[in-house]
Image (cartoon, rainbow, N blue to C red; front, top):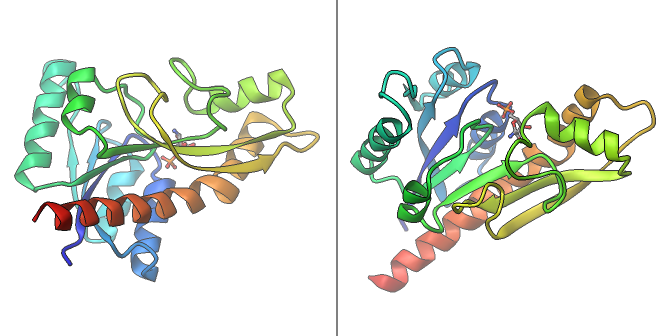
Length: 206
Ligand code: GRF
């Protein structure tokens, strides 16, 4: 059976991308294959991780593409030229338009560092999510992998993993624990689940 071709969209350090690369090397991600990494930031360390793993890496910035529409047009072209089946947003810090998400309906997934529906939606990204969780005083947080639709963090949930908040946590310590105990585990697991499902659907259509 052919593997699902995966593109990973990134903006920063790329530790979630690294978890996907490691899962592929370990064979736990086997129904899909990492074929392309696209960063919307030229200096993202994630690009270096992709190169080291031998995965094609592209930078597409909004500025260089003449705005959001130009960025999405260039992205669509890059994805379609490579026959990408599944798009994984792994620390991708930009909201995609309804036009884009409907074009790849059921084929885009995102990792969010909280238990949706808490601390999610517009404005909840990066450290802000963990600051909000600490400010509210929740004792359990976690991470969620979900499908991406036109509503920020609003698509169907695929996997969630809880993580305890500990006394003395700062946004930084909590962010790190959520990554280690939840994000790096469930993102590769969801990538495998969705890749296998997409491949099964393809076989049925044949
Ligand atoms: C992660 O916490 C992810 O959930 C969030 O941004 C962070 C990205 O980290 N949306 P990295 O680039 O994967 O290291």
